[in-house]
Length: 440
Image (cartoon, rainbow, N blue to C red; front, side, top):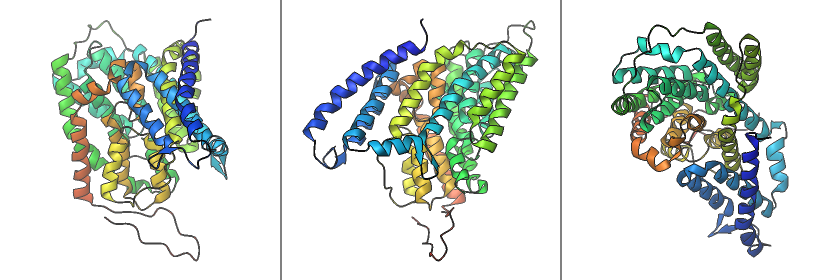
């Protein structure tokens, strides 16, 4: 039987063979040493760096590259003698949930939002919407702002997918890479100041950072939007103007819109109550299937892209980053650029453990910073399922250079207006004096 899983399995087998061929000679040469490495740098950093380089340059083979990178990271960890650590990391230990839960949640969201997109398109709203938007470049700007607003109360993956689906309909499928990048940036900007809008801010909130400490990140988000919003909308208008509606014969499907609303509401409720928005998404999808026929066959097309992201995130979580420089605004600024190529979830976890950050500035940096590269955020990877042409790192940087400028403008706007205010979110243990927070 020809299913979407068979190509993934074939690629996995080839990736495993390639990874073994790469790492085994190095492991044999370094057998008996405490750590495998080059010039004092552990081999895991080189393995993950090669994975990111492969994703950036071999954009037509990203699934094979990510799976190869994951297998390579696992083999290196085994050669380091970290087999027990990987089991605890995956399954959990000492009362902490394992990585499997985060990966399962992410996979469920990616696959579930594929069906949300299908229901949204079937509602015919994308065909009706042009009647209510400005027909020039301002229409694209309004759409980007709407994506940012949606992302403030919904996961940024859903906001990006909704924006990408609307753009495909409004522009006849001819969506410029600059506008694709702007949709990604808008979804990440909207989630930066909300504890329910992004996984990184949710992690901060769960660990004890008050939502009010993250709220000022919207200052930076609005500053960034003032740059990437108009530039992205103008580039799209020049590439392909917004199309007029096909007439008054197109009618909305209220039942489909109801299903979309149920999926979004269930995601928010499950995220607040359980920290598992994917559970709410799939519960609503099954309920929706009782209301209207659901094209579950769409999941076959979404499977390779979802597996790619899971493999990349899993590989990133195996990088042995045990120490970070002292918390400061300079290092926070640098973390934004790191998050463009390195999964921001493990970065955020490390910062939470370290403490002493201005959490709003950090939320913007690790959240919006991922917009500077298409695979720098889960929203970007999810949108690349709709627009595979965006998977070229060189094209992305060439046409969406202004995202970097927007990141810097937003960061320094917030730093200038709100300053640097580190906050220790954990109370010290009884009888233990708490050290002063780090200042630049």
